[in-house]
Amino acid sequence: QVQLVESGGGLVQPGGSLRLSCAASGLTSDYVTIGWFRQGPGKEREGVSCINSHDGRIHYARSLKDRFTISRDNAKNTVYLQMNNLKPEDTAVYYCAVSSTWPPPGPYGMDYWGKGTLVTVSS
Image (cartoon, rainbow, N blue to C red; front, side, top):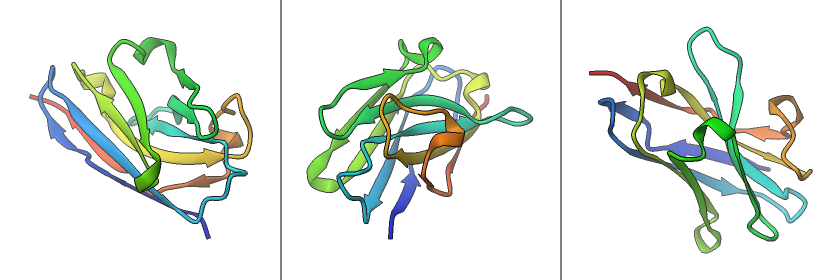
């Protein structure tokens, strides 16, 4: 059974940084895409960044590429999202998700989801 557990969210001031973690278990090699999505208040869920678990290729939302960095630790079955220079509009629940397809599908194409971790950017 696939389980994805996010952690690392919290309250941060504008300009600050956070690192989110997604601990995965039960994954097989079929799940080639693992990544991060977010859903802000009153907004639709959107893609943030995904990584190809086979070859390490990375996909970013264009507007976030300069501030967010995805990485993985295969030994720990964990994917990270480093978020720098956070802005109030980054406030959202951040979700980890996996898919058996690459390039990454949109939110509706992902196969399994974690429960999310809340990031609040506010002074």
